[in-house]
Image (cartoon, rainbow, N blue to C red; front, side):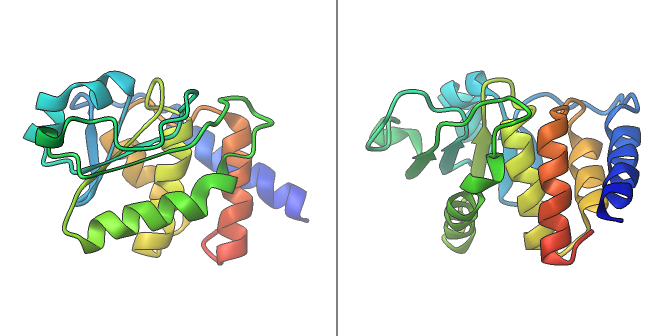
Length: 175
């Protein structure tokens, strides 16, 4: 029964994600008042980060260990977090969600704004962003995907990550 349900939800997700959207305001894209999603170029553009009031950066594609905030002290980036994740269907992206959620919530409580990024700003950051929208806004997976997709054209095309989000939503009662 869960398999049939998963197939149904994957079909719904595909319908949302693969529908062409003309609304692509550029990058980084604001998803919630305190959450932006983008790519590595956005994370390197300090002027762009400052223009959006971004104070925290979550790197979902770190391949070099960075033990401290790599941003200059005058950049406005007060906190930095990273984890190494592969963009492949078999990778367990949501293993990083508890730490990511803690980081994003900390920024929110401090009145800050977070850029969640990976290499392209599509899959790794997309999965973390959708999971966060679900739990923060207490909305279903489908509604969270609609919200993110409605603001960012290219997001979450990794089917493995989509399946993981279905399981996560089921576990949280948000399917």
